[in-house]
Image (cartoon, rainbow, N blue to C red):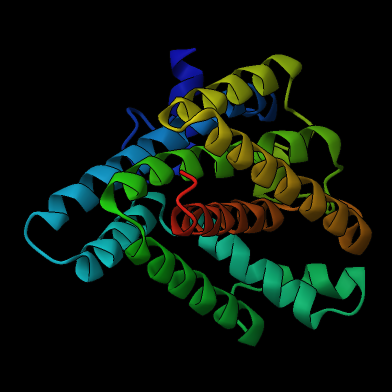
Length: 250
């Protein structure tokens, strides 16, 4: 289990892992059980950076510092998937053309706009929340967004014959899904039961609707699609936090 955890850390972050572990598709599928735990590590460390930054700078500066730290920690892994997905689905009118565009490493108009609105959205929402809420939602949102990989890979086919996402797609076991789900649910202890329930519903709705859209447009998922759903889930959970906070519901 320690090896599987280290494989998950190596796959999702830039954190150093001893000896640069080699892996098989099957083994990485089992390691996916620890994706939400990696999310807790990323979200928790980002929350620490945010709270430390608040001691010396204003919230308007602390939030971008925290967001930059999270992107550095993951190497912009998921943001890259979001940009490629928006480029492909925005510019490709056919399945084949969309997949071709998504494979291109260059960023286009749709991808650039998606990243701009993503960062602006996160920045605007998090600066409006109280610090007591921000650190909790950072942990939950990062865990939840990485949980979305599990059901998408478990129940949807892979849209192309190769790619990084194929290492995980269709390799997710029932036990990995259960362990990952329990890890995500554990983070919800940071909230009241009403807020926790809303966070779960938002996460599931985003996962289901994005999965259905990928299936219709591409015939399945790609690694870029997983990154896109990750970032959309994170952003919408922050938006949920803002709505709840505004109406004093959390």
